[in-house]
Length: 95
Image 1 (cartoon, rainbow, N blue to C red):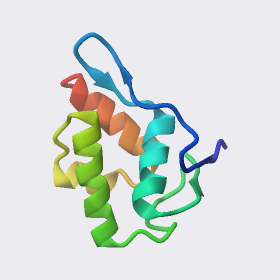
Image 2 (cartoon, rainbow, N blue to C red; image 1 turned 135 degrees about the horizontal axis):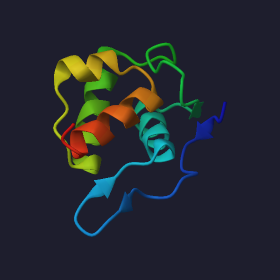
Image 3 (cartoon, one colour; image 1 turned 60 degrees about the vertical axis):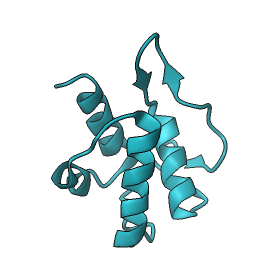
Image 4 (cartoon, rainbow, N blue to C red; image 1 turned 30 degrees about the horizontal axis):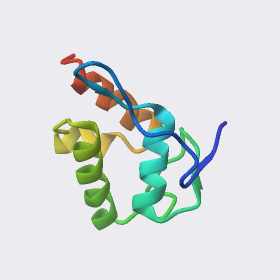
């Protein structure tokens, strides 16, 4: 499992007209918002100490950074960086 720490990843990749998040970037955002040193792609961020307030901050940061609108019920179910990454890609591609 690749654990990623804060500030160690490149910015989001962008294509001609769309922004595609990379899993490592999502991990970095989770670390920054949660003020945690590192998180693996399959680690539950609530188990890493996220409160509901931090989760809302994370939701807003992801929506802003990734240019998507994430439905609350989908966000609540996506409790790991990998699940958030998959959700964002799905929303960006209209699936």
